[in-house]
Amino acid sequence: MWLTGGFVTVLVAAAGFLFYSNLKDIREDAKQEATRVATVESKAAVEKAFDEKNINDQIQKAAQQKIAAITDRMIEQQIASKLQPLQKRVLMIGQITESQARMRLGFRSGLDDLNSIMSSTTDPDTLQFAKGTLTITAEDFEQSWVDSQRTNSQSWFDLLKAYTNRPGWNSPQNLGEVVGVINKNKDLNVVAIAFLAFQELTGEKVKMFDLRAVNNWCSSHEPKCKVK
Image (cartoon, rainbow, N blue to C red):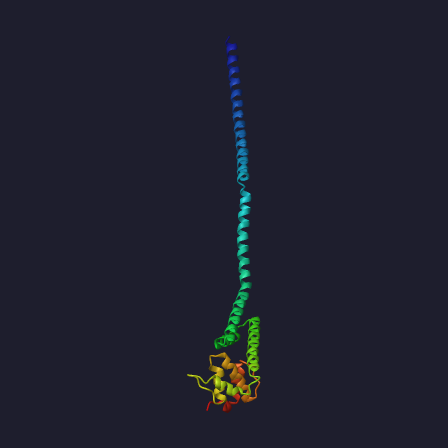
């Protein structure tokens, strides 16, 4: 009985040891399995979160929007730099056209502004348009006065004196005073007659409204242009 009891005790102890050892292994395996499962599930959850929220797409979209905004800004700057000279040219053409309209109404200010534009612009197209406008308008003025005087034997100098014979005006009596009318009179029709009178008195075929040509001629013929 003692042997039997002892054997049983040993057997029970051995079984307990084996059970404990197996239990320990089972726990370790379970722990590892639990860790693996948790890792897999966490990874899957993260991937699912990225997929559900389209984070990659959102990142790409945000990047594209940022790039698009920068690109648009660069394009706007380039377009602005290209359009600025064109916008200035359009503005100047408008001013030239408006100056021509005032000239045709007989205002000297239109001629003065047109000359100012030609002397200040750095744009060749604007300058060409301004010169062409002045040439056409001046030719129209000259032709109009020439046509109106075809049946009149009166000289241009006498016609000028008749037109300036009004209160507050001084009728020119010599070439120097004719040049004074050209340089100062506010009525462009009177200035046109003065140009024709200047051509008549000097024999110089200066272009209508070419103020520089008149004053250059006077600079080299000062005694003749001197106001007496």
